[in-house]
Image 1 (tube, chains in turn brown, green):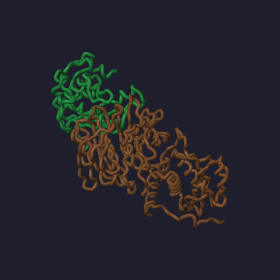
Image 2 (cartoon, rainbow over the protein chains, first blue to last red):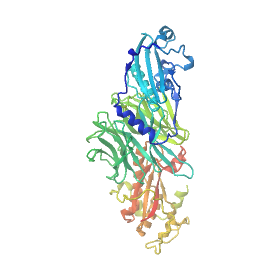
Image 3 (cartoon, each protein chain N blue to C red):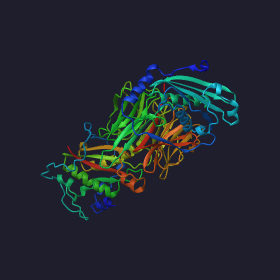
Image 4 (tube, helix red, strand yellow):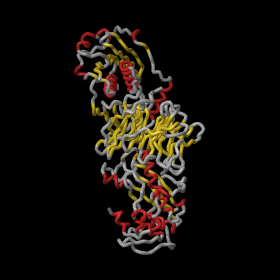
Length: 445
Length: 190
């Protein structure tokens, strides 16, 4: 077989060698696989870019894991920016560069073509290669080859999606990232079961990192993706923990009298913003994780809570009832004068700022309807992104392309995602129980 | 609803009515730092209460017994049988009826210094979760102020807010929401 491998740049993951191994060690040894999240696309986007992803040729012994091209197609579809051609409607299925008839694809109006191979060297040892082709120019745009095993194959598939996504859109892909969320199961006559879980962005590989019969709340990712901070009521009071996802070791970092809530990591990973009511009333504080020193940022008789950092770490954006109803404010992270940001509507809460610092997302309440809303921080332009009625906990993808949030599906809490422009929506449904408080993890380092 | 009717006929406390929860400023105290995981309400515990010092015997107009004897807390006919205070949406204001109910609980605790109560604040599911923790905390604090007003030792009263995390009714409608906006008084022997 003649292949122009010299055109394929040999490349491994950009991660440090130990990272990938360590990661899978954790996520595949800690707990048995939980009930999976199922993705439903609930609102398609007009103007999605057609892309042909030819099923990868499998050489050697085919296995159940040989679905790389399906995973890539599903990823790109979930982004709302691509419309992968159905497998049955592909006009040709080239396996090699030599077999590609660019003219044929050009006539069919397909601009982007992906071909690839999965070579099964022996059980649990694979070689994955793919090429992204520009049909109009008739050239290869990308070409990579990766070694893989059963555990890394899904992750490599997401990584391929990221490479394709970035090459065509110019924006870094966020498929090879993780999400964290809380599930709650209540069964008649049984203690409720609360779980803190981590999963791939397509809902696969869900792993439980904490089990409790008492509520778990407000998970927050450390900027390096190695830890989660969260609130646990396991001791019949609220306490904030920081848990290392690799070692599974955790540290209790806040257990003051009253509320210990809403922990959020600072962009440099050295501090947590949080809510404490030890002063008699909920206020925003910043805790240094190195020195354990606590600094009070707000001091007001109203409720101040739900802090979040601007990406440069200079400001904290938070919810306050100081005007009588919850509204969103910003305050210098070193403390100072708080300025009000939201003026539309009577209920605005749970803010998060995009990684480019330009967009604020939050929950806007109108009567009994609560919807995810965005605001352009420069122009003040406000856009309602979802329909409600009980949407909450918005969390940006690290590339800012989508907003993950919690919603309700009849009587069940579900996760959902909407594109930042509101045009594309999808739902992640857990087979059993409620799922809530999603938070999208950082880019893999 | 039953819980409002129950206390509506009880005698008024003029002092209590004049006490607006928002005007009372105090430091939160009495959070039981060493409390362990599985403490449930000890409503059913058979602690011996021989004398009920300070109790005011009597019967409310609707038939509920008013007694602050130690064992009264387990008496289904006693005014203290009502152990949940309900609230309006996004509010920590306590209605007149509940001010009276809380006064009875305060008097009971003042008369029984070996009993303690955990005030568990809750919110309905509407709005954001951490804001609801803060809101439910304010509700529990409002109840706490009224309890302490009866001369209760601050160490007898602890507060925890669960926000919307522990609903008693699961439907997404007004009826469920009303039941979920509450402060539960959970008694324990000290």
